[in-house]
Length: 437
Image (cartoon, rainbow, N blue to C red; front, side):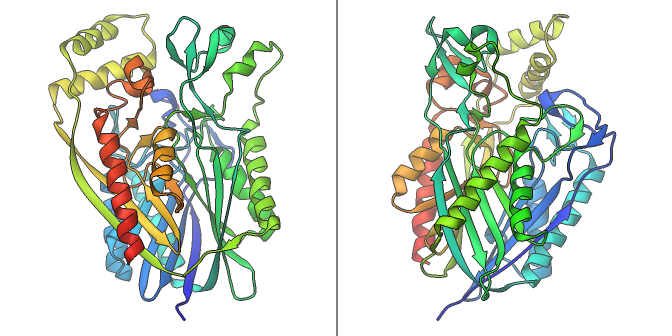
């Protein structure tokens, strides 16, 4: 009988103080540490085929970083690069992003080298610590903490994060979101958890400030380690959350309502309790300990700045009253105008573990894209990871796309709408391919 093997590890990657926390695209030098940042790795093997999942406490990562990690693991362990998924959890209180250019902000090579070194070390340790395991899975809908951040207003407009002042004008959210909270746990022969992969979709942007913090995923992981010990590795994958955050703006009609400064702890620990409740209720054993992978790359045409967008960008940069985010976006529009990028390489990746499929998209898809994919391949169970392998920007859907909200305009979303359908088609194709392996 085929056996499933699992190994797991984590390494601290908290950068030095004084480096940039690129929240809201402005320069914010780090002044302290709320909690340490980590890179986590889980290696899975069955019948001689291996996959490695990596989750990194960072805002984003680029294709060059992913390629570097994959090539190192291929040299060190002989792992097929297509079987290595490298994902960012998209915290907004991490250090410099692992990209050559993030909207005009250059790469910090020292930070990139630190994350690369520790990420590879964690993956190698995970691979070399494999033991026979049983995989168990559970999922629940948790509607307490994730909300669509684009709202239809009484005047017919669509606003992102409309704020307290306009809360009474909200008609409702414009899109359905994915409330799935799932866990895939691996138990050794004695029944002791070796590691687990937790999946939930929400922007980890609940903290703010200038201290490094892993946001609610860090608090969730701590709660589970309290239950199972410090050696318990919890790899968090952020789901498709391009249009999801932790704020329910409809509640701001109550003048006394507000979110506390420790909301990330409240949220993370509560989600951790929900995972522990799934454990107590009994996780189902994953059928057939099979490991497989499939990936595909394709070239997608990029949107080009229009004459109007270029004119508006120039006007914004000349306006002394314009905000920092507006100026940063204007600078990027002009950079794209002067140095056109006609196409982008898009990679969709699927890792199979028994009858579960981990699907990675290289950017920040809106939540309803994940819902469409789930429906397309039902009853198969999916674990969805955004920012897998690359940060290509948002993938916005209607009606927010036509409304021109922040996530839908250049440079936030560099693609036309048809790319979304193609990505869903490719993901379905890869799931069916992995299913046959």
